[in-house]
Amino acid sequence: MFTHVMIGSNDLERAWDFYDATFAALGSRPGEMDARGRLIYTHEGGRLMITKPINGNPATAANGGTIGLAAVSRGHVLAWHEAGTMHGGTAIESPPAERPNGAFVAYLRDPDGNKLTARTQATKE
Image 1: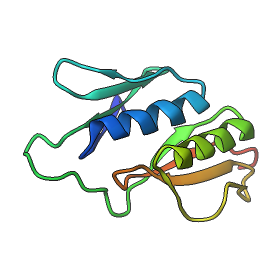
Image 2: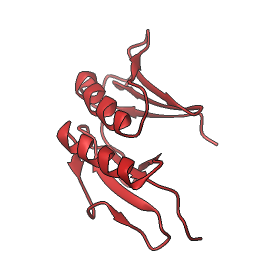
Image 3: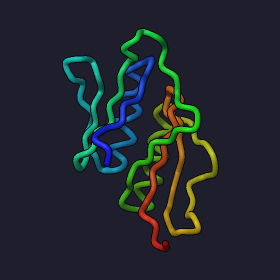
């Protein structure tokens, strides 16, 4: 359904460090900066793009918004969570845990305050 998700950052170098570490924990490649100064991560046809806002105002996190990232295993979720907290992210909500539907999830805020979750697929519907 989605081609990409774009979020803002006030410090692209800090964001680059955070996202390279967290995506490496999920088995993905490092990000690349494009000619327009946007940090881009690609995986299985999807793209996460991080940029300074084009209107020149400070970037702010979406209130109520969450970006969900697919993880292959519990180990990947835990590694993602640890990498995030070691690279400027903040653990939020509950500790990494299994949900009633069997999905294993963890939540972080990136250094700019954007809410992220990594999760395995649900095993029960």
